[in-house]
Length: 212
Image (tube, rainbow, N blue to C red; front, side, top):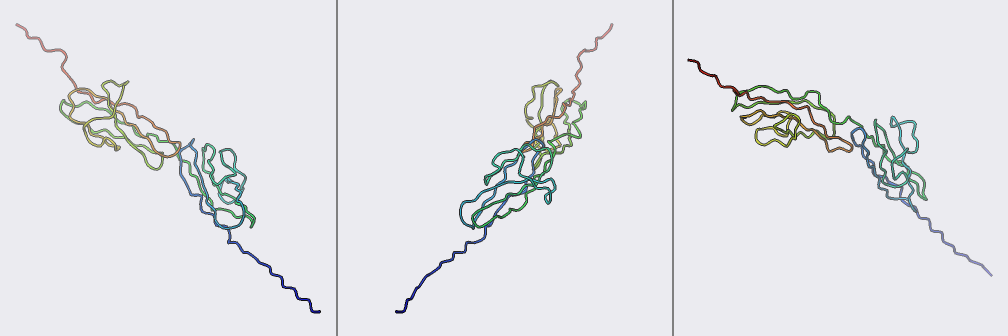
């Protein structure tokens, strides 16, 4: 008799893994940064390993410090200088490497020019100026005033430019002290106050005495 056999073999081809992320970021000295990837394609469970490099092309090692080194979301250790990061993702279909993210580290906000005081006449205004740098993504300015050099200081009322590097006081009738506070919203960015500057209004404290 004729023996007939009919076997079937099904071959499933899974799509290649596609990794999205991580993204570049800029933080202040002493800050940390969260990096994340999302993965599609492949087959089976994904495993993750984050790596770091000093130049983004050579010397890759598994990350040192931070948290989440073997998950899709990694938070770096506290950084004092630039580092580059990537994520190695493995599944049943093999291994894929993410794009490289550059975490740029910039200085905390700082002043290069502090405000300078002056003596003006009662009823006059005066413009104070600062120059500042550092911080990310941009600096936030807030001018403050006090009746005493040592404070306490509160946000200015009146005048113009209270949230810019150049502040013009309202018309003054008494001596007032001013300082500028700068901050930035980036990770790890500090807030710093300038030195205080007095805007002095002279007053006659002793009246002349007539003679006969």
